[in-house]
Structure formats: C-alpha cells, structure tokens
Image: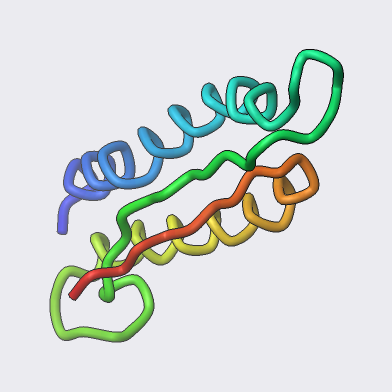
Length: 94
C-alpha cells in the first residue's frame, strides 16, 4: 500500500463518517427532547462497517484498520451519547 492509498481509505471510510456524525450530533440530541424539555423517542446512528474490522484477514490491511476504527468510534459514541438518548451501532456485514 502507498501513502496515498492510506490517505484515500482513511478519508473515505473513517474521516467522512466521523465528520458527518459529529455534525449531526446536535440535531440528534435535539430530536430526543420535546419542546417542554421532556424526553422523547431516541435517535440512532447506524454505521456500515465490515467483518474485516473485527477479524484478521489475508488482504485489505488498511481497509480493515479503517473499519476497526469505525467500530471502536461507534462503540464509544454509544457510551458517550447514550445519556442523551442517542443510540449508535455499527453493522458489520461479511
């Protein structure tokens, strides 16, 4: 893999997801409360990962690393944002 391969996959699989989800956080948080401050339905973040991010494979090292980072970031957001009624999950298809 070249440095440009690494840069491309990081931007495509991780940075774009990170930036978009962070931009959505205020909207997701606001949607979990009513106008009078009561708790409403929860919001949800769903990311599309890959089984490559949770198991070792013989190819796609950089791809797998970006998907593993996505899994970890999603799990941390679930812990951090859960108190605001925001769920976060990462689907990891084969």
